[in-house]
Every structure is written in structure tokens, then in C-alpha cells.
Length: 232
Image 1 (cartoon, rainbow, N blue to C red):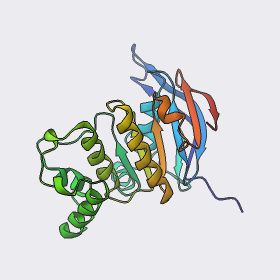
Image 2: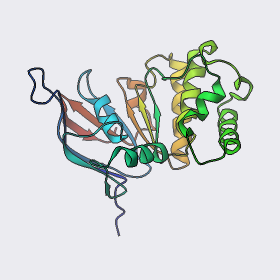
Image 3: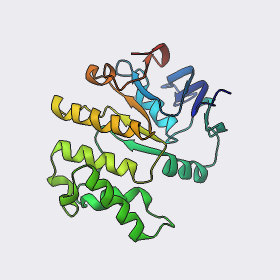
């Protein structure tokens, strides 16, 4: 018996400023599936809808029409409180500009996604410390983020994305501010996450990423529509 897809996208469209003079169709009639354990590169030129697509998949925004099913549950029209729960428990985000709190410590940044939470503070801290050790950041727990290098900030952002042990890691242009060596380090980290079962979705312009052996599928967007879908 075939397994159900982790994410199923059906006739998905996103329109900004609908019915206004500056209405803009960001995505139009997209349909595709993502299986558990996939590593998907979402590619296409600037303005093709990659970041919008990530925000919809990660429950950060809602589609105008169409649907997104996560674990066979239609999440497209759920009230915000339910979306927030799914977002916290099931998706980890690595943003292009990291979105770290620069005047807070590394440890505080990694713990942040679980606030507020019913989980005891001591357990959250222990999980954060373990992640920092995993990414060679154990000695930087109390260091303010603004004092870190770009590569260190990237690792803090990944640790923060993993604090809730999500099913899916979503990364938006994760190598935009990294040199080649650091980009290759990132690929090694993502490969390790996939090895332990994480599904990874990456929006990228970087051929180093979308041509990497890690990538199992490539979905290319153009003008908000599916241009092609293929194995790399």
C-alpha cells in the first residue's frame, strides 16, 4: 500500500491585494506532492513565487484558493491558533537573513520558538544546549548573536529551527550570505538532518545547492506557475 504524501498541494493560488488596482498574482494553480524524507529544491528567478510558496507550506500565510494537506489534513483554512500549533510542532524555519535577535544570547535565540510553552524551562534549555553541542556552538551559549560570524549565525538559525524536533525544515536562500566553504558545511548539516528522517524544502538560486547530491527533487517556478519538476 502506497504511503500518503506528507504535503499535498492542490490547485494552489496566492493573490496579494485582491480586487485592488495593484493586485498581484504570486502563485497560480500549483499542484504537487512532497513525501516524508524528501529533499526538495524550489528554484526559479527572483519574483517567481519561491518565498511565497515556502510561507504557505510552513503555515505562515494562507492560500487565496486551493488547498494544502499536511499528513492528509487540510490545513488551508484552519483558525490561526491551530495553525500556530502546527507551525511550532511540525515546521522549522531557516530564514535568508536568519531573523535572530542580535542583542540576545545564542542560547536564548535557540530556545525562543518554544516560548510560551507547557514544556518545563529546564527541558527546553537542555534541548537547546544539546543542539548547540551538535553544531559546535557549545562554548557560545552566552555570547550575543551580533558578535558571531555569518557561519556561526547560520548554525544558530539551524539549531533554532530544530528545537521543536519538526518533521519539516524549510530554508529560504540559506547560502545567500555564505561563501563556498560555509555553503558546503551547510549541505553537510542538511544531509545529516535528512539521514535522521527530516524532510527538507529549500528555496534557492544557488547551483551549489540545487545540483548537490543531497537534492532528491527540483521544483522550478516561473511567473508563479510550475515550470518543471524533475529529479536533479
